[in-house]
Each structure stands twice: as C-alpha cells, then as structure tokens.
Length: 295
Image 1: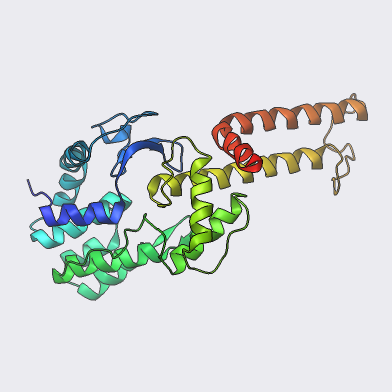
Image 2: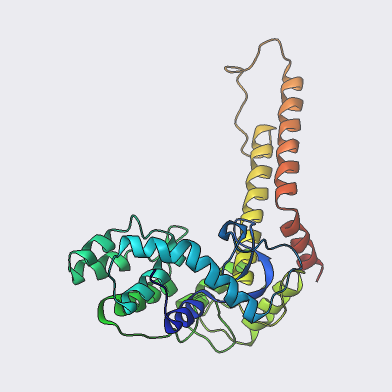
C-alpha cells in the first residue's frame, strides 16, 4: 500500500498545524494533534487531554494509514511519491479526493485542468481564504511538478510580525468577538497580539501565547457563532412580542379562541425557551464573553 513520504508528512503537518492540547473545533468537536477527532478512529480527545509530539505523529500516521492513504491510492493508482504526498495533503484537508474533478484531469494527463481544479478548492465558510489559495498552489506544484515548498507560515498559525490578508481577516474576526478595539490593518502588531492574548486568557482551553493556531481560530469562530445566535434569537423574540419594528399580529394565522394577551404570553415563552436552548448550546462561549466584558 502506498504511503506518504517523510517529507510529505512534514509538509502536511506544516500546512495543518499541530496542537498538543485538546481543543474544540468550530463544530464543537474535541480535537487534538494534527486535526484528529474521535472520528479518526485512533484517538478520543477530551477536555484537558495533552499528548506529546511523538504521540501526535504516531496517531497521525495511524489515521493516514487507515483512512487517507488508501483513499488516495484508489483515486490515483500508480501515482509517483510526490503526487501521492500532495494528494494526501489535499484529501486530509478536504476529504474530497473521491469527487474532486482535478483528480480525473490528473489521470488523463491534463495538467492545466488539474491545476485549475485544485485552485477551486480555496474557500471556507463560502469565502475565498488566501491561506487555502496558497496551499492549493503548493499542492499543485507538488502533484504536477514534484516541487516541494513548505509554507512560510502554516495556514492555521499567525503570530506577531505576520502581515497580509489572513491577518486582516483575523483582526476582523477578533473585532466580531467583542474583544475590544482591534486595528484592522493587516499587520499583526502589538495591539493585535494583546487582543489575541486577552481572547486566549478568557478561554481556559487555550494556551495564552499570542499564537493563532487551530485551537484559537476554532474558538474565535465559535464565539462569533454564539454572538450571532443569541442576537438573532433575542431579535426574533422582540419582534414576535411587540418590540421595536414588530410585525402586527392580525390574527390571520392564530386561533381566534386565544386572547391577544395569551398570544403575546405564549410567544414570549417560546422566545424565552429559544434563548435558553441557544444559551445552553453556546454556554462555554457565553461564559467567555462575560469574562471578556468584565476584563
């Protein structure tokens, strides 16, 4: 069975980032090492879990051997080592080796179409991400030309001194968390470093080091989602119960046996229940927001 080379493994780790302390990803799933969750079949991350770098690499190798390398071997039979390495990197990041159009183009020897197809996989959350654009270009060079280029800065790791669109996007996201005043200038300077450290300090599962790796990125996304959910639920409750801009209840879809007062009370209770559900779902993020507001 084909397997990733040592050089390919190091490039994959550089692309993905490596976290030795368990954290929850954007979906709230406990994760550790190089993006490994319980679904990997090789580890069951949980709060407080810490592993060594050697353990991280062992677990990654096990996950690659059981899930990712076999899928690439099937999709790209006979691939040379460099192409196999690049394809494993792509598949580990996207899980899409079986359906990506560039694979068919590669099998047919259509290099231009394969590069174009790879470049299209550069979005996250519906928006183009500069880091993914650069990663796809590196993978294309590796697959099609055998040219290896390690990322100058791993996609998921930003730190003091970095600059560019990825830093600007980070600054915008930090501002959305309510952390306070954050410069939106694309430069990871002292003020951005202070904001990152303040955010990390408000979340017990994060290490306060000013490094924006996978764990910090995931927590930022979760806090933003929590703020949006609470705001949307609260706005919906205010709208339904007669707040500013409320839609008039004309009775067209309401049981005529209910009085207007009973209707308002019922809707208010529903809105309260929704807020409780949202609050419970995002309880950790809400606690962190309270810590941020108090600091």
